[in-house]
Image (cartoon, rainbow, N blue to C red; front, side, top):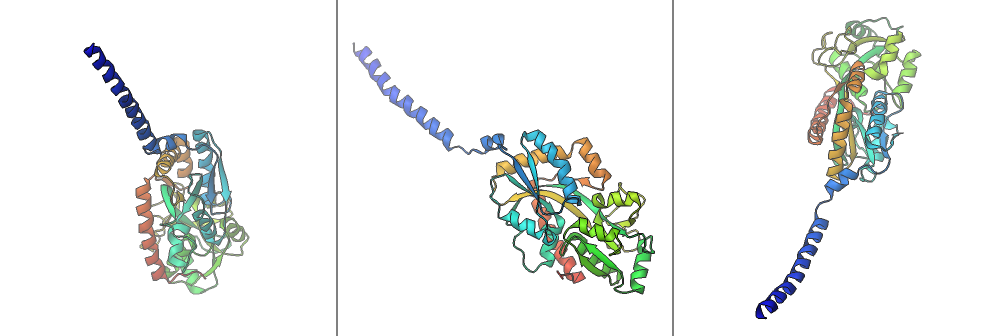
Amino acid sequence: MNARMNTRLNERRRRPLAGSLACCLLLGLQAMPSWAAEADAYPAKPVRWLLPVLPGGGGDIIARATAPRLSEAWGQPVIIDNRPGGGGTLGMGIAAKMAPDGYTMVLGVSSFVTVAPAVYPKLSYDPVKDFAPVTQILEAPLVIVTHPSLPVSNVQQLIALARKHPDALSYATPGNGSAPHLATELFKSLSKTRIMHVPYRGAPPAYMDLLGGQVTLYFGTIPSAMSHLKSGRLRGLATTGPRRSPALPALPTVAESGLKDFIVTTWYGVMMPAGVSPSIVRRLHADITRVIRLPDLQDRFGAEGGEVVGSTPEQFGAFIAREIDTWKAVAREARATVD
């Protein structure tokens, strides 16, 4: 009897103990970080991709080529939202104030992420503190294009003409503080020329006036310039990278053409408002890098002068910090400011 009583007593003691263990286990599971479940469930609704550029420019072309593939992968629409103005600074300012819930991506472009801080005395956003880097999509040189009426066919002839007629030539840019703006100012400084700056609100209106002959020169992205070069409506003089572009192999680089210290590239990447969950950043990075490395997208970007990068968030963040320092030094040397 005592044995049976002891057994019953032990069973009664174990029951609340087992219940306590189950309760603790449940509470422990509930207290565990939810990043895995969060990443698996993302995205559960449409994702906005805010582009601080006008439709038709290089960044717009790249985003619109990538967005459908992300939609296919996620089973959710990726909605392109163009917010141009201020050389990209207006859209970046809007993006910086968006909720960090993972449902707003931002197209980061060298012009308004790493160049603008070098020439704007005050910005409505901090490109480092206000954004979480996801990945650098690609990097590409610029191409110097002119209206066919300009009597030059290479960089040396352009420099000679600009020196002979100071301020007679004009160059368009997609806005103050953009990469083409600072690139051209660096070109002017190294070539000791004076060329008038005419800023526009984005690449498309700049091209419109260049095609019409209202301005004579433009440092544009290869994707946005390619159709005009193929049609003969614009003339290419040189590309600005460290080596010739596979997209335009017949054109020499500016460095080949005599300005050895002139090497400029532009880049495009994905960023999100600061404070977004690291698990969403990791998920987004994995999906975007997989998509941009698809053979047909790589071929398309390569044909338009871009080289796919696909860096990690940490690599992209370090790259942005270095680029900001580099462009600040260039701006001081070229004495380039927002005019």
